Length: 173
Image (cartoon, rainbow, N blue to C red; front, side, top):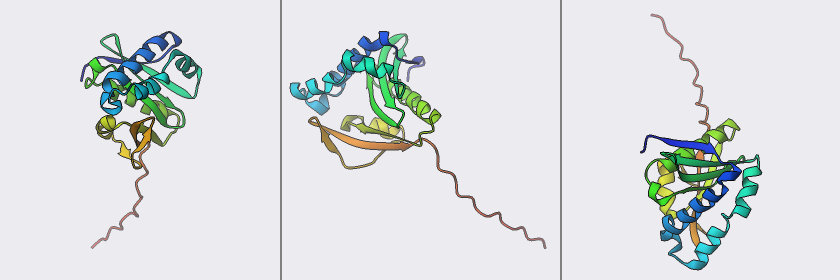
């Protein structure tokens, strides 16, 4: 893992880089999922344009973050205050350098601060091991979304209270 990953709240001036990171991550990083099918790629990329991103940035119910690795844009993530991670995209050259983990940890902290007890997301098959490493578990059978298999996953954010056991009585002899 690289030592300097900066996570910050995305601003409107970041919209273009957010769109480019999402597109590169989808086209290159998710190739095993879409098998370079132009119809699937186009449908997936179409949801990450400037026209989509600007309203997300203005919505107080969303957290859209940008990761910089050694000062360069390396990843983006977005979650809703209801506890759903919408996406976590990392530049292909920044894979396996801690960027995705830093983004997810930031989102989890934001959700915990809002009292959210459980985070949910839909993972691709190729990202499932990454999310398992971060403590997520599969919630349901895989299903298809736009020609790509998705796996519903969840993770508790707030540890359940331990059962309180009755105090043992001491016996004096």
